[in-house]
Length: 150
Image 1 (tube, rainbow, N blue to C red):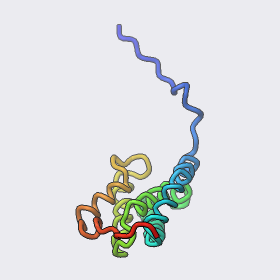
Image 2 (image 1 turned 180 degrees about the vertical axis):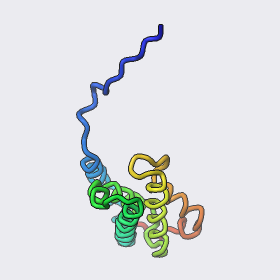
Image 3 (image 1 turned 90 degrees about the vertical axis):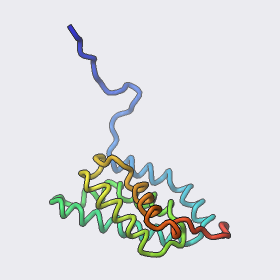
């Protein structure tokens, strides 16, 4: 005599948005924080951002090809740009160059794609990368410039 609960989408949620739209909104929301980070931490943030973005896109292409999927749709959804931006903004500004590359590769290849890709991972790839770098390289990850305003 058990009745099934009726299921439907929540009435307060608008119609579904494509992933690319959501990720573009996340990137827009990150702009003020990125500007403040650049102002307070200096130009090293731009170097981290460039390294993380280049590594993330390269690893995304590699992972999609290894999984037998075309890389273009995955590159267009913007999720890898969000991951790279979050990693870059969380890192100290003058971190040794291999560390942002290592962290971003770990985030995209192991945390995101080892579990099946976008939406399948149990952990936030950017913060898993930060945790890996913090545990593996504690001195480099906790060294911040004494003068924070440029």
